[in-house]
Length: 361
Image (tube, rainbow, N blue to C red; front, side, top):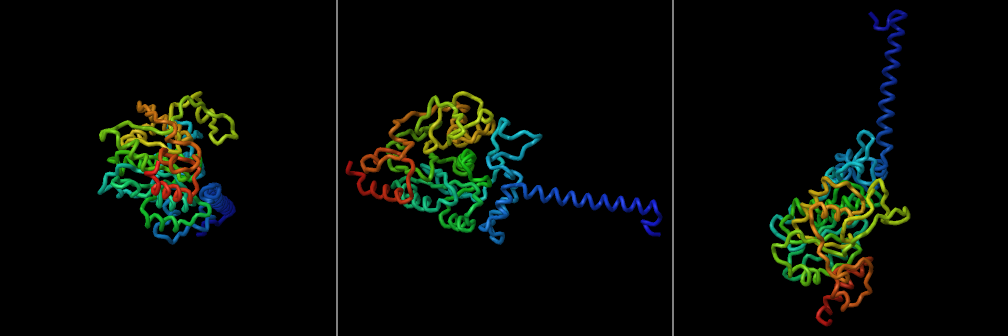
C-alpha cells in the first residue's frame, strides 16, 4: 500500500515533505552563515599562503582550536549569554594553545637570561638582524642566553611554510592561535610568561622586548643582572611608568575605553619596550592573570599582575631603558640597555660597532 495514497494521506505526505525540505534548507543556510560571517575564517579561506597539504599545516591546527578565536580580533572568546569575556573577571589567555613550541629548549640547560622578543611573521629581516647581533645566544661570553620570538597568527600575505622552515632552522619561535594584532599584545606577552613558567622555570632572569628595540645585552648582564644575588626573586625593572592615567582620546594609540578599564589611574608599571624580571615572576604573573580583568595594554596589564602579587618594581636610572631612539654613538650605547625604533640594519651596525669599541669609552 502506498504511503501517500488517499487525499488526506497525500496532504499529510506533502506537509511532511515540505517540512523536511524547509528543515534541510534552514540548516544549510545556518551553516553557511555561521562560517562565512566569521571574518577570521573567511580570511583564512582567502589566504593563498595557507597550504592544506603541509604536515604542520597552521590552518589545520587553527581550525582545531577555532572555537577559541572565531570572529574575535581582540582575543576574546565567543560571548556567552550575550556577555563579552572582557567584561568578566578573567583573561582569555588560557584559551589559546601553542601552534609552534620549543618545549625542549631548557631540558638540558638552565639559562641565565631568556629573551622574549615580540614580533610578527612579516618581520623576518628584524629577526635575522637580532640573531646576528644583540640577540645572539653567544652575545655575552660565558653567559647562557636563550632567545625566543613570540608570534600570533597573521593571515595576510604570510607564507606559513616560510615561517615553519624558519622555526625548524633556528628553533627560536613560539606561536599561539590568537590573531597577531596590536590589541592582542597582552596575549602575546602572557604566552611568553606561560612558556617560561612551563618550560624554563629555572632561568635566573628573563626580558620582554620588541623587535624594533636595540638591547645592549652586554651592559644588561654585566652591569645590572650579574651583581644581583643568585637567589634574587620578585625582581622586576625597566623604564618606570608611575602615576599614569587612562587616555580616553580615541585618536591615541594608547586609548582605552571606560568599559575596558573604568578606573582613573594605573598601577605602577614598566614600558613594554623592554623590562627585565627574575625567572620566578613568570609563573606569578600567569597565576595573577587568571583573576585579573583583561585589558589590551600589555605593559599596563603586567603592572596589574605585579600589584596583585605584591611585587614592587625596582627603580633604575631612566637613562638605561629608553622609550625613544637614542642617537647612536659607541660611548652612549655602551651605557644604555635599550633604544627604540631601530631598523634591521641598525641592529647589526650598532652591535658590531659596540664590540669593536667597547673598551674605548
